[in-house]
Length: 113
View 1: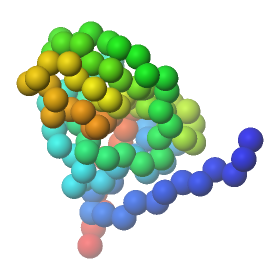
View 2: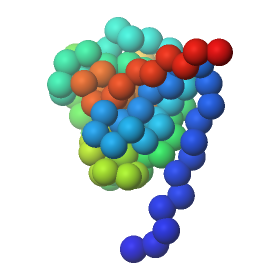
View 3: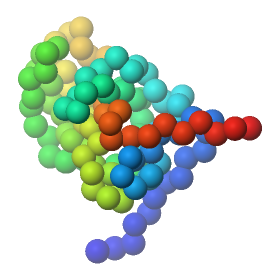
View 4: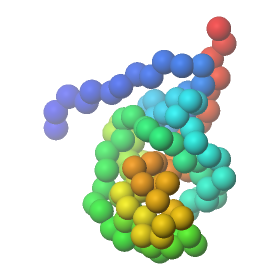
């Protein structure tokens, strides 16, 4: 096992792993809070940090068939959501290249200036 290199994010709103507090995303990377995951509500982000991708697989969601990879916190290895590699329905193409992080698996921190 090699040395773990984590990215530390800076911003007013920070999303972290609920288990180990590793930085996952910034508030300005949040696109939508209107998604649902395995554990309930979830958020769509344009970018995330400090995650590892699992194997690519096809899953059928309520919105159709998608190619996705689960994403795991690089520190504690908790599955925190998934990455949309490809959407097969034309009206779902906006999700491609984006990340879902489940609300129950992250914490929101607002930093004061």
